[in-house]
Image (spheres, rainbow, N blue to C red):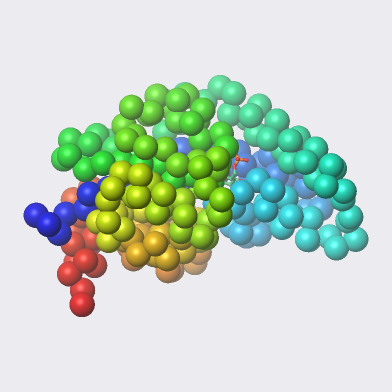
Length: 226
Ligand code: BG6
Ligand code: MG
């Protein structure tokens, strides 16, 4: 079974739990304070992107805004406070449909599992969901120097666990994340609309459609390609 995957690397926000919505609401509130408005279409560009880079992209919407570095740090801090308020009461009920079963199946078949998140809040969120024990390794914003779409988040997980990149499957809801997985030479699974995730090797509409056997089937056929 040398064709079988050896490691699944999951993005957190928007794949394991719907915290992507909370990031959106928190950025929206912050942006309104800055007199900037943005919609869900623009928000797609913020998915998977670090806190500071997200702030820079929002500030770029209004070139008349000129913030000092200190002010930027304060705004990023404010956004994180709004976000932390929104996630204060999340628990296992907030794990997206099908995810815990999928983690159980992967673990049960002896395949390793890692987290590949751009969030500094990742470990805390995973703990609140009660899912930490499924993960062999956690890569968060503190462990990488280059965020998505750079592949470092995904390659760090594979390198640490000693697994070849072509034996890995990455699961993402963000275009930047799919790009990172592809650049790492791993099999990419996109969760969401093909409008944003067309570059993924395999796309499902939502987490309920993430079927372990089908993902492995798709992976094996990808790996077998010349
Ligand atoms: C990513 C989210 O997982 O983490 C982004 O998709 C978010 O929306 C980024 O900005 C950074 O998160 P945090 O929790 O460190 O601000
Ligand atoms: Mg995400």
